[in-house]
Length: 402
Image (cartoon, rainbow, N blue to C red; front, side, top):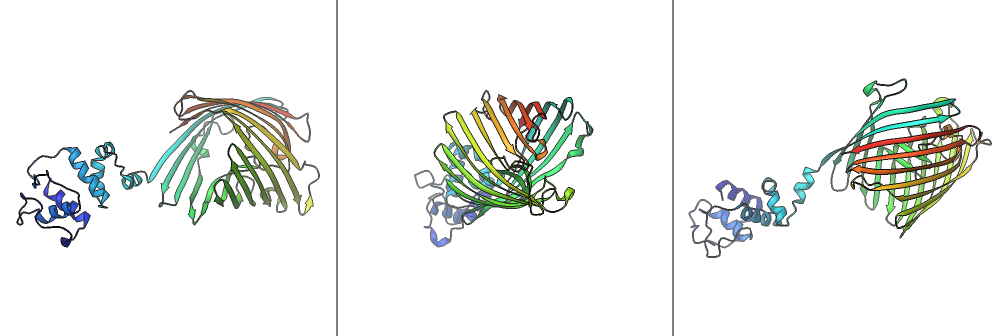
């Protein structure tokens, strides 16, 4: 063991002179340069010598012998991060996890997603066929603030290959997410610009500037409030009560929107939406359903044209897992939703600008290789105010994650 190593480890342990017995090794006399440091390490149980009352300071050590000493020092609370990093493989083989070191190394993580999408559309509004063709890139940065709090940010770029903005590169780049997550007492908190998935996406699935607080595990109470950034500044507030009972999940909630689309029509368009939903898993099959009831008004005058209630059901079999090559899944959904029951719906079908829609979607997904997932879906929906106005579209995407 080198002189500097002995001294550094002894200092890291911080054992006082009164805590150890004098002269534990016959080959380390009192006048030896490392006498005090070796005695400290022996008293702390970090070093034991060779069992014959000798220290053997002139002998070469194997990496595993050194790793054992580092492991014992760590167990005593010594700050030996550099040594732990050097002997990480040996420590791992010895069954010692360098938790603090791992935590520091993983303090900031960068992950990403690249998605190519093609969608063919046939609808009455376009009087024929049209399509979308784009490439979306997302870079996620996650940083650990402390044991209870973390930060997440996301930069998004969408490059259109068809349309007015085709091939304009980074024109659509934005800092799309920036939020913190953590705990205050028994409460789980999310705050900042994040994606809100309200009523399983049946009311709203897009970014918001707001906060969310929840309490509980199998039975969870959640409250949320903020600004729905994708609907011209509409403010919202609400809550949900959810419970998990084995294979059955239940949820009921309320979301109240104020001043929707105020940038285009001014203040006064409000909508309060109640919902109740459930899903049940039977092996590889999941069945879900939800009923929604809206109460829309403009300057306190109730909306009379748009339907105020709606429902949706879904059926899913298995599902592609990005980490498992060869995994796959099937899904089907039916929608009958009035215009007062949703704001930004999660579906890729045509929702006819919020006037209500009715129809279905079916699809499949498959993991071609680890972190490479493809999805194909078909949607057929019609306008709730005019059933002669309908839309059919084929969606296909290939997503790479890293």
